[in-house]
Length: 223
Image 1 (cartoon, helix red, strand yellow):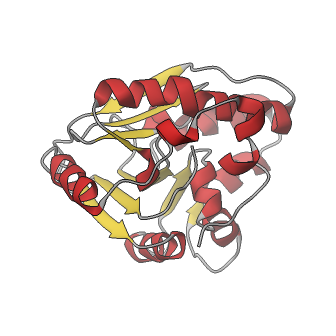
Image 2 (cartoon, one colour):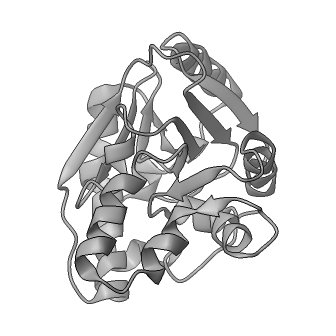
Image 3 (tube, rainbow, N blue to C red):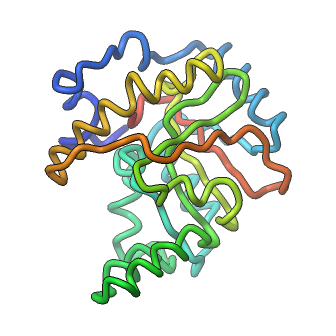
């Protein structure tokens, strides 16, 4: 079951003035099945997780002990318990995020952040999935989406089925009308400054077999 925090969508809907009925519904099994086939036809492996807890179990299985791991900022990853697990000592992973935060020199820390998008395993959420198979993500700086097109050795996306929409146009509209207002509200609470749609990536095909894995979770997660 998803871990609800102060930054989960349910706690930001009122101030962000979004329409969850339009952009945050759980689709039918038939729609999920259709979407999975479309995604897999684009060279992306899909694993269905029945719950947030199951999604974390999948991550533990697919990332080997000692692997170099970096993750993008993601409410979904927090809600499945990834943050709590990875920051503990039990994972056995080499966490690039810990290396970055431990560096006190601003210039060196910035260099580490740039290099981190090329981690062997990069874990990320996404903002929308089209039934036609495209996966869309946006962020302010590019620290998350920079890993998507090429840099990361393995890209693992964890996404709730609530982010499935009809087509690519709706996927982009979901970002503008739902994901961004919620993220903007989160940024104001967390950092005291607004966010912006700075960089966007549309993952429409992956030619390197096995590089991209989508863990599609049968719960409403993130935004």
